[in-house]
Length: 126
Image (cartoon, rainbow, N blue to C red):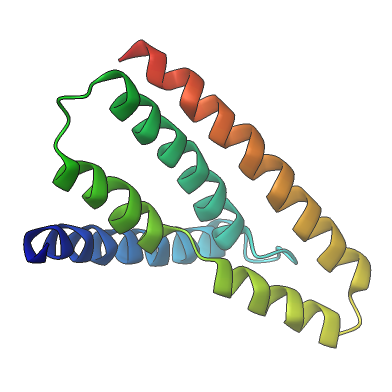
């Protein structure tokens, strides 16, 4: 159990740093963006990755549970962020940007589901 927690913690550490770098990179590439593109990109990419990782694990039963926890609960959990997504929506709503918030929410959900599915499909390559 302790060993698994260390794997999860290590993955979360790396995932959190990766999310921060995506946010900073998006801010530099798209400084005029009105939508939080860094969070959107991290969440959508995380959906793809978790679909990929779970798909691979379902086909390769020899995959270590520690590795699976590192990749999914750890890395993907640290990389994606529901709380930041909700906070950004709250900021939009408080700023009177109801339609921007609605669009961001629907886009995030739709892309998340599509990319989760694409990740699961991509896992068949492995």
